[in-house]
Amino acid sequence: MFSFGGTSPNASSGNTGSPLIRPASLQTSLNTQGQPQTPILPPENSAILTQNVDSFSSLSTDAKLEHLMRLMTSMVVKQDGLVNTLNTVSTDVSTMKTSLTNITSLVNTHTEEIVKLRTDLTEVQKGLNTLSQAPAHSQVPVAVTTEFTISGVPEVVQSAHHPQLITRLFDHLRIPQLRQHVIKHRVMQRNSASSVRATATPLSSTLARGNRGQTILVQMVSPQVRDAVIDAKREVGKINISQLNTGPLPADQPDVEVFVREFLHPSAYRLLQMTRSKLAGLKRGKAWVKSGVIFAKSNDVSRPIKILTEADIHRLE
Image 1 (tube, one colour):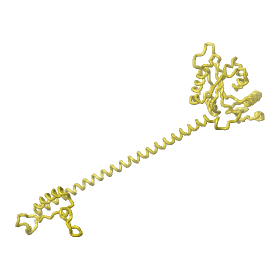
Image 2 (cartoon, rainbow, N blue to C red; image 1 turned 45 degrees about the horizontal axis):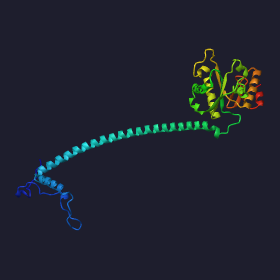
Image 3 (cartoon, helix red, strand yellow; image 1 turned 90 degrees about the vertical axis):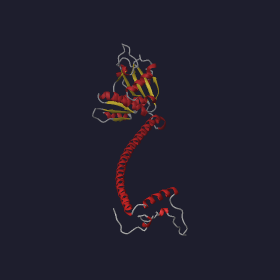
Image 4 (cartoon, one colour; image 1 turned 180 degrees about the vertical axis):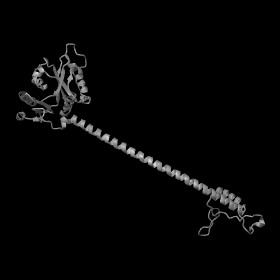
């Protein structure tokens, strides 16, 4: 492949190649004081490299150059392959980085949603705790009670079935979670003054049915929980005894309406009766109670008036 003029200095010995020159790594070098140093390579590696170098030195100059050219060409090809591999790895790393970024964003979004849900649950739990502890930790006006009444329950419903009837009521009002906040219940005596005011309805409309039935007084843990029951009743509307009774009614027992109302303090009940008497005289308007406070309006378009004293009743005219 290549030719060079002249003869080799080793021509007389039959060696047409150049003199053997060992790599510096195989030579015993001198330190700064001129003392021999230990070879860099281990003895076994040094022997293998010495054998290869001896084999290479036996080649002619042209053969050596040709061999070196092949090695350089092979290195260029390998280098190009290495560059392609590195480019592929770089692309894969970029794709993986994008995927990790998307996963991180998704995790952050879910984490925010979980934190928000936990915050909402904490607020709900605080609200329930507030309702449960309201009697001990809040200032409740004297005129506000924690009871409500279930009136118009037929006599055929025995008192032993009243707990089940109360449970059915909470289920029907779609507030079963408030059943656990019932402190106690009892049947009110029909002839007592408290029994009369428990219905919070005019006696004329009650007696018109011929039998007022039983009135069950249910005490809750706080006025706020009791108000939640009353509000649920307003949303549901009319309730008949067949919807609450745990068993079939006798054939001669009509399916009467059951009334669920706030139990009033005596002073509030008296003020309510006076308000209703006033509206009856006017032959218009209506009155109702919410959280121990009486509200009334003289017609459908007027604004409700809060009745706190007898003087407020005159504002209905």
